[in-house]
Image (cartoon, rainbow over all chains, first blue to last red; front, side, top):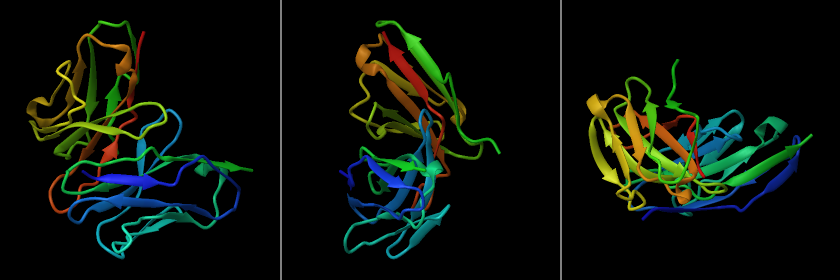
Length: 111
Length: 115
């Protein structure tokens, strides 16, 4: 079945630092790739997505590029804010017809 | 703009009791998903509906769990004879199915605590 490996957390950064959260996946077929963010006590919010190779998803300063050759979809942001503190989940959606999540990466941004 | 809503947001019950959760999807969405999330983990797929048809169920979904989506609108997830291991966040998501991708939008979740 599908699987995803994310950079282990927790990740702690100072405000305005550069963020990278690594994500690699295995999936049958040609999956779509998603990043979701979860704030404490809440459900998941869609952050960005990409549906084909070399597509770049972007939203709120976050970006991720679909790299089929390396089966990766790393999340980046040039300058993080305290309000970005949350848990981030990478998830492929493929022939299994369900999102497959890893354990997520906890990000804490300090002022 | 109304997103996915879930009710209740929190439920505390005693072991052995039955509980039922409700999910109202985004109105035009024909797919509806249930996931379970335990502390420190990512969500795990439980089941999904295309309109009123339940098309897939995870092996995680024991026979104490049942889900319905009458008339292809809201959905309910019932857990019978709850066990302490059922304590988790139950998340519902909906999507406009079709095509080669499926963008799911999540509700706020129902947190279940089984004492």
